[in-house]
Image (tube, rainbow, N blue to C red; front, side, top):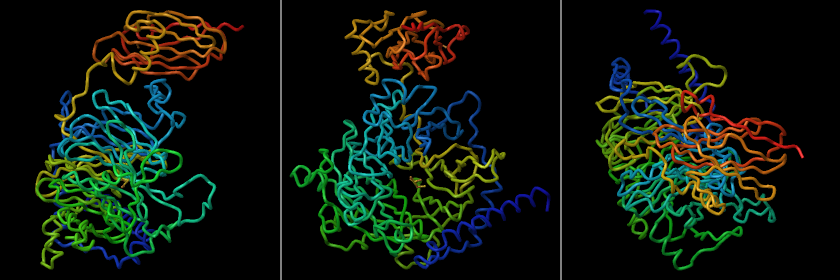
Length: 633
Ligand code: K7E
Ligand code: CUA
């Protein structure tokens, strides 16, 4: 055995030990729970794993100057942002600040971003999990990407022509918006999202906050164009992840706390939790018929979808399921077991009968393949295979859906094709176009929560590891390790033909429309004029920018003035973005070509304060600056 081989074996052993440790940590739940036993790996599976390791696929190489075939939209987790990746190169192309505050672009600091954030403008952080693009007839339409903020119960919309957030709302009556998906068919009229944490229905602190019987979790249905909550549905238990069908009829969500437990032990007592299925037509009819209540002083219609309601059905599944994924042929909802080694396959074509009370909830389950320890999320190709992440086993299981269904009917088939080691502890995974009718079975990305030994050590906080896997052949092949900063929970892989971003801004973009309206009220033509408007203690400074100068070399204010600087970038050249930074005032922003951006601050330091352009725009970029004279009175 060579040194290298010995080393890799050692590493492997350490990793396995580590997995063992984790297994013990989760042991109470994973092992006592539902009599869970890991499916032993067959020799064929071992061989497949080994083969996948030894053959090097070169197909992920994107040469300098070449473009990727896919866009990836990655969430930034508790970094609060969304990232645009190039697939298969795994290059990070852009960051879209959403719930976080961004120094470079001024997101969270500019007047435009504060307006878009609205009532949550003072919240500077977020926890983004699930980025999903709007669809038409089950295919991406390139218009919007929606993303949740678990930390502050918000949902934001990114407009894909400029790749900036143009709307953000706080969802009322819920706490911790987690799972988020879009209606796929006929188009994304609705964005659906889950309230994860249970809270008193009227959460005003007046009733006993310890009376858990008053706690609820709500499913929220958002009008995608208006970005308003259309209605909400009260459920039994809590809600975790969600997805929509390909018929425009049903949404399904997992629940891991049907017990309504308030601590870990209580949350995992039952052998079974459930999947809630929502009947969209019945919900819309109930709203129309006025069969709802409102709560907490807002106008959102809240429907009662608890057990016994016509609006929902509860399908028992093994305890504490996590991911919810719809197969791209539109046939199945899949609930990933987490504490159970199984995935529960729900036949969508049986749901009509379930809602008509012709069959029992469990009759909709047509398969429950045993895949390994800690199944969290499942992705798909177009050939009938599913790819499930096994968190505890640090593997991805590739399995055949129809064979898993046959096995459930008692036939002796080995539906598992391969288990591929990933590094380590994968959460979500995603296949190219796999959440749409266009699933093409080319790429799979495994978003691994731990990287351990895969990269140069960078201190106690380590990167995560986004691994690219070639799934175009019979076996999965690992082709790339990609370190990422906290924390891509979920990613979607979208063919580049679906996304058509603009090269420069339109002058009438709604993102800065309100700023232009103010300019109009001030009688300023932002495209040509450089002007200071004094309005009591307020000073509005309008200036243009053309590389490498601002239209205004200096302006005067008085100490204590509230100053708004409005910059319009007259450059029409693609990629010539200017910045505006006022030294010593915590003021900085991006102004894209043909855009207008503004930022407001108090001039609280007397004397000469230089402002400068901080986006490198020209050979004379350093000279692109001017002075604010702050007169002490
Ligand atoms: Cu991390 Cu989709 Cu929020 Cu699973 S969720 S891992
Ligand atoms: Cu303008 Cu740098």
